[in-house]
Image (tube, rainbow, N blue to C red; front, side, top):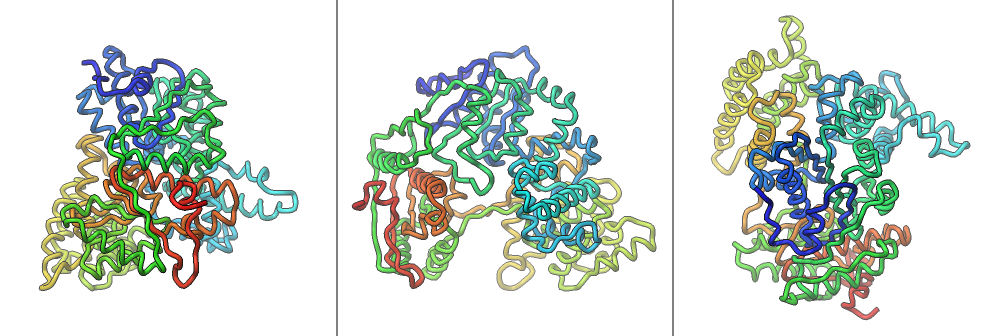
Length: 626
């Protein structure tokens, strides 16, 4: 079956039909880059029906990877099995599952997703006298900086002056102690996945050669968002200048510098691969007027790629842009709420309110809810928050890592929040020692004496302790928790249970769809840990988001509030000079180009008692005098 290219423009077709070597696709907002990347992969498969090589696609988010995977399955059917679509982190997790034994990892390693658990490791290292950690929170930030920039303990002296040798040695000790602890405890966190994967590929060249043999073509989405550690892994996958590397990027949308992204990354790519460049300037999302002001804004950035073309609007509808100013933020929010109320309830999901920070959004949410408008600040979490789902999940994790005291403690806390009875992790451990059983079995023995959770205990012993049939345990547990959640006379017993249950069922379905029904417990848990948990919002709910969380989205009606100096751009950006201001301008560019129909902009003369001037970005867009 041939891939249908009839809907592609000439630039898109050129990218999709690219053959061998490196290609950089500079794709502006609304240019159809995801479709181009997807069809590029589909084209490679369709024209090589007798080959066995695989294609590796690396996306920046789990959502993007899942959407491309589903689309490719529609296009190719069973042939899509030759495609591995992953995020950088999930790809690294695959490498460590298969080859982590080279670093003394077992394949059933636990993924740490909570910073408090990571801080607890540093405190434990300090308590045991292994290293001196005066400020665990600050030390964790330094460790994360090293992970993001691919810096090892051995590299650190390059980043410290000779007068700071002591600080260098201290950080070397903390970093080495932390990473050694992870190996000893068979644990990884997000940053260390990249660190350890790089170690495996560098230290054991045959593994790197094997991976390169399997994946003849590598395709990367949102390349501009990659940090140096991710690029180092990519270089190990594609070490040659002639590597078949297909990269989609937009230097105007680099807004994750806090996570290690940098405009220099594209320059490194050009230096390392000398790729041919195809540009996709056509914007099919935004109305013509929105494209016009976005172009005016971004041309003020001097670090743009010199040959980069400005976006070209493809929509005939010019769109509607409205700018309003107010005396203070209360007035600004009041007008916003009044405007939202003009939309029928079943169309409020088409409204997206953007701000530079959550501080402004919190007041918007409070005022909307107070006047009867449903609104939610959209955020992502790696963890479940309702006690019933926590109990189920921590029980499964403890079955996988039976010696983990931290998991046992979390499990006991969740249990107490369900039925109000305290359960001590020390009591569970004592029973386990006396009876010579693993802690998870002793835990189920203790909760079996409670009427509320007796059936959970029975199923837990049978499904987790005796057979590791974890999905049967999950189905039974959810059935029990559904009943418990409705036992109170008014409302739900556990307010966030419905959201967590929806996330659990959605993510579980996706994991088994991708990896099959015979997935091991540890692989299932690792995939679940990497998947962000988000609330499914009803149609009458207005989405409130920061610019960073809205990247990759679009909406018919976009409201950007707080367009005043010190808010957007932030005080930090103004204070720190041109480089930071250019990223802040990219943030505004991303916000503006989320609109597919109407764009509402607003600012106030006063925020929280402080007088503010209109944002310089409004003048740069030509909306107010300069």
